[in-house]
Every structure is written in structure tokens, then in C-alpha cells.
Length: 143
Image (cartoon, rainbow, N blue to C red):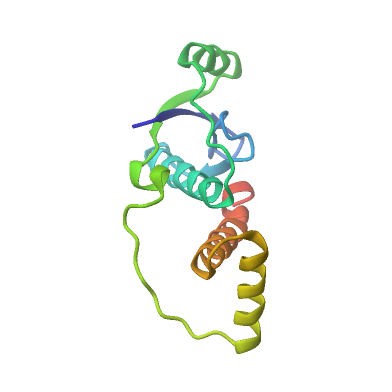
């Protein structure tokens, strides 16, 4: 199981900003220190799933010594965040769903899938992950 280090810093409103240095675009806020780990784990799982779907590399965790030094300089609280194996390998926990979509949209999805050499399910999964990621950006950044 891969583990990453998240850095927590406190702002003027007594909230905690959660950053994953190995994923610079990933940040969110927590109102309590108790919730920070859960939010960090969710954020990491979503980011790994999105990267896996998009075919992007999943970075190896940075050396803890370097991150602990950075945490000290930032006056941040370091926490260890586990990456779930089921998310990292992408195959576990698959569920079949039945959805109704407009015929024209399905034709466009199929055409795009053919162009990219993937199946309809692959393209719809990627679209769902991107939609979840995009709608969660406000929660992660500005909350």
C-alpha cells in the first residue's frame, strides 16, 4: 500500500488547509483537525482514480525526510495518508449500471470512443470521474 504525506496549515479562520505535495493541484479545507485525515484520504483517492482513468502517471511518494523538513519550514502538521489499493489498481469493486441517455449523445460517445481506441464504458467512466472532480473543485479549493 502506498502512503503519501499531506501537509496541514492553519489559516486565520481556524480552518486547516490540506495539501498533497506529490499532487500540487490537490488541496482542500477542513474545519477540524479530526476531519482532516478523512478529507485527505478522499481527495487522494479521487485524484488517483482520475489519473488512472486519464492514463496519467501516479507519482511515487516523495521521501518523508524531505517532506518533514518542508513541513517544519511551513509550520505545517504532516499526516500520513494511505492510497487505497482498490483505487490504485482500478479493477476492484466494479459495478454494472444501466442508464438511459439520448440516442444522439450515445452516438457521439461511441464515435469518440472509437477515435481513441477505448470502449463506451471506458469513456463514460472517464466522463463521470471528470464530472465528479470538476464539481468537487469548489469543495477542495474554496470551501
